[in-house]
Length: 84
Image (cartoon, rainbow, N blue to C red; front, side, top):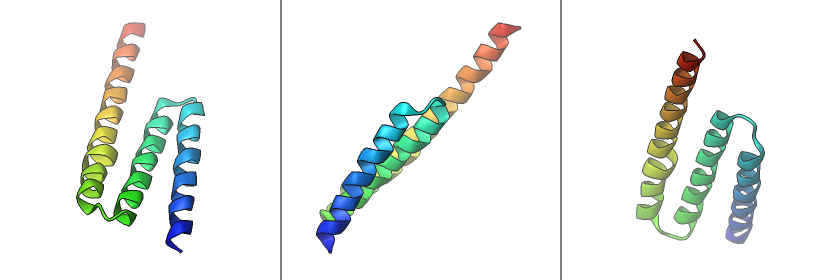
């Protein structure tokens, strides 16, 4: 049963990673990359590394996604100011 969960999680990470690459909108790619990080969190818990999983969840999926989205919003505001 654990082997099936590991395989399904690996396949999910690969599919979500590919989807993040082919997305046209950067915001969608950032959200999908957060999904890759959450898939990694699941694998870390399965492999009995809860400390690494918690760190990945907080920093990898949480804070870095927030920073990317804030940067994207900031860049969008700058580009709209340049058009004026």
